[in-house]
Length: 244
Image (cartoon, rainbow, N blue to C red; front, side):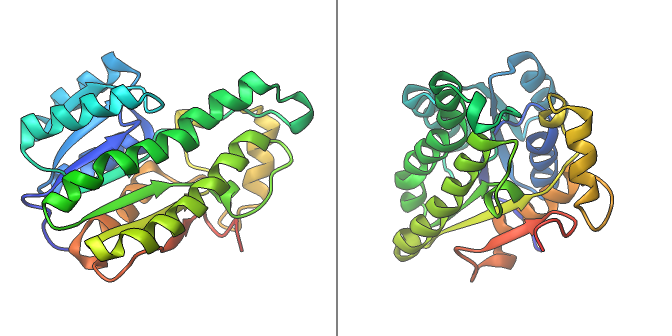
């Protein structure tokens, strides 16, 4: 896919799971990466293990002020922003009937509002360097309905629409906006699911296994790299066939 030498990426939710795998892979291809997360101890440890190409910033994606701090820290450390991976998300296995307004708002603020804030925050820095790549991590729940993940599915469908709209708007600035739709991936976000729920999801996955964080990271690398230079508004399902 070519080198990412000279590129600078921000990856949210990068203290573990998919975000950590993405940060490690992008730096291995030459990028410098700012990892953000609310899990400060874990995030600092990952960044320290990666080395001088990585910086950790404690960050709540639902905070506009937090995004200002991330942009400032990234520019201070690395001088530019070329890539944003909106990876941070939370999930609660709750149906509509049991979803109260506070729970819905909690999920909305991280999964949807946080993506909006991230895209908005990097616009001027990306314009300043002549373009960029925004990669929004949605979910297979953003491609089909879910009877057990009402609020999560709602926000992931929203990310799909936001990606399409931003791709149309920002193409003139050479800013590409694409989305990845993971299926059941072996990350801590699934730890809160009842075992029966994960078993049911596996049964609807034709490949009959969970995906690996590294398999999502490879897709992120492609969409971040010059190899995907003519791709914007792309919807890339990495789900073992679940959405077919």
